[in-house]
Length: 250
Ligand code: NAI
Image (tube, rainbow, N blue to C red; front, side, top):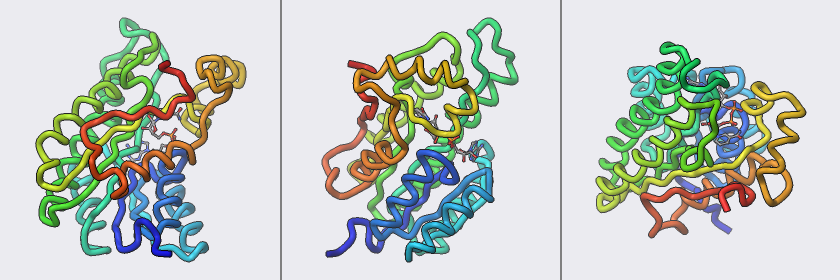
């Protein structure tokens, strides 16, 4: 049976860990040639090694997504290495400091917005350029349950994840008639290094209660939805924000 992403080229930012790594692995399993881009090159290379060992095709690329020139070079690398760009998962992100808005330092705010929000503008700008030349492409921006809901102690994160929903809709309206679909995914809490590095076990256990399904999610469960949205099965889905949250927002 032909694999769903056979012949496609995919780019995943933050692909060296957690949700991005699961997306990269699943895309490769489904036949895509994948560029695994991350600030942490060793993490990206480890994911690539797993993909290669399983018989897939992938390359690691170091990038700081908050640097527009580095993002431009990353997209060019993907397009030149594999001859185009069909799918992009703009997923790299950080949690940032946990404190309310009046205690947030200006440089802390600017850093979280740079990594979580400006980066997605840079990524879409250069990815869409390539996709328009092919008149096809599909983008998923990794927002969060905090793209609609909010918590007190992550004001910059909440702002950036809300912004991603708006940026997704704007890009979708602008480019869907040209063959480029753009959607956002909103995960509930997923047990990844991002969550484990910023919260202790007691706080992580406390988060379980926010999810009616009774547990945190897995990176694979987020990747399942992401791949569906990237695939041709989602051909009439664009400009929308899709939750994978164990019932958090219900
Ligand atoms: P993670 O920490 O496991 O992975 C994030 C990856 O992004 C890391 O490999 C890191 O090196 C990379 N990264 C960080 N800053 C970067 C930069 N400036 N340039 C390039 N790469 C950079 O985190 P996780 O949990 O897999 O998160 C992935 C995305 O999912 C993030 O955007 C996060 O906000 C979002 N998300 C995560 C949730 C969770 O509960 N884990 C819930 C909702 C959304």
